[in-house]
Structure formats: C-alpha cells, structure tokens
Length: 256
Length: 66
Image (cartoon, rainbow over all chains, first blue to last red):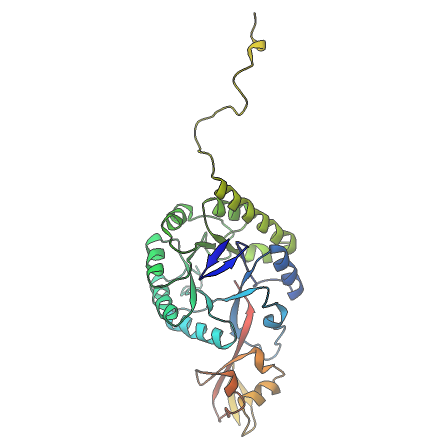
C-alpha cells in the first residue's frame, strides 16, 4: 500500500492527463493504468474554442486530482497557481513544478524549496518535482513536503533513469514517499525505478504519445507491479558467472 | 464598455457581473476560476462582482497536464 499524506493508494502508477489525442482515449487509458492519482494543469480558457472540461470528463470519486503548477517560473507564480487550483476545486494536493527555463524544463531548486515551505504551511499536500538532488530532497522533507518527485530524465525526453545513482540515494534517505517522475519512456524504465525501491512513478508522455495509449497504459501498470514485487522479494546479488544448473551428476559425460 | 479577458479585448455591458459574463461566453461558472485585476475571486462572489471598464479578467480552468 502506498501512503501519501495519510491517504492510502493501491496503485503505484500515477498518470498524467496531458497530450492525449482525445478525452475518450485518455479515459480508457487511465482505466487500464489502474491509476488512482492523475495530474492536471491550470490554463486560461480558450475563449474561441473552450473544448471539453476535464473536470467533467474524469470521475473525481475514482481519481484523486493532483494539480500541477506547470508554467510557473518562480515561487510566487507557483503559489498563485496553487491558490487558483484550490479555488477551482482542485483540493489541497499539489504537484509543485517551478521551471524557469523552457528549453530544459529543469526545476529551480531554490524557488521550489521556498514555495514548498509556503504551501505546506498553507495546508497543501505538496509533492515537489525536483532534479535528482539528495540534499534538496531532504531539505524539502524538512519543510513539509508530502513526497518528493525526482526526475528520471528531463520531461518528455523518454530517456529513462539517467539520474539512477542520485535517485538511489534519495530513496535510501527518504522519510516520505519517493515518486520518480518525468523522462520514463518505457515500461522497463518504470520497472527499474520500482526495483530500486521507488514508492511510485508518474508517467504521462510515454503513455499519451504511444501509438496505442490504452495498451501502453496496461503495460506500464504491469511493469510497475512487477518492479515493486521484485523490490519486495529482494533481488539477488550481481557478480561472477555461476551456473544455474547443478554441477553434480555430470559424471556420465566423462570418458571411463 | 471594454474589458480585457484572458489577454484579449472584449465588450461587456455596464452593470454585468462576473457570473453573467462567464455565462455569456457559454462557460459553466462552476468549472472555472477567476482572477479580477490579479486578485482571486471566489465562486460565491461571481454574481455580486461587477465588471468595470478596463478591468482585467482571467478565466482559468483545469486542462490535461503532467
């Protein structure tokens, strides 16, 4: 069972709702993912073509909305978006994103720490999106982060666990759940993160942009379960070659 | 009178409330959140909050995102 901010979840796969080709595909993929937590963003309404309302499309009884502060370039903008989110009915959960550089989309650690402190004190359950920095992860827990979300690789790159070693340290030190977010491009990447002991992963692009998002959502769901089971079981040590079959009982091959 | 809504110039009637303006855009007031001159407006305030000439309105809502 995954527990974040005192709430229990069966699924360890969080899914993003961006980039899907249609609401219908998104809904089917989310069902297949088994996810209980889904991320959403806040944007201006397009006055010419308002489109579908995602609040109406998704069953709020079934999915916990985890609004993000994507687009925020500093702490003040993130806090403004957080309060808008709460006023819009988004609740108290927040994936905090502060990304000043649109080229890399890498999070600003200083502004993220400042915003986490302000928002945690304001009653939000803050899940900050961070570069895989073990020291920052601890500092965020000190100021009240409900979980930490280190990036496997920059958003949308599908590169996998580029920051593997740093994420291992974050997991080893964590007092709150670690959700590996961003850059996971294949179910094998998600499984590897779970095998390392991550508490959960968040996937968006790899599912939404797959040729068949519904099948890919199922594949990620299975990979996350497989990786988790492997972690719970414990993996055997790596080392020198050793035969899997018995050494004994081969005497009949020897010449007499 | 002219107001600025989501960065665009829009015509609104004098005496129009935020709620009436949202409905005039064919939007459900329950599904959006509003900033009036960069200050958050609670949903229960929409009917009583009157538009002013040149006011800046942001109408925001949830969309798909990671």
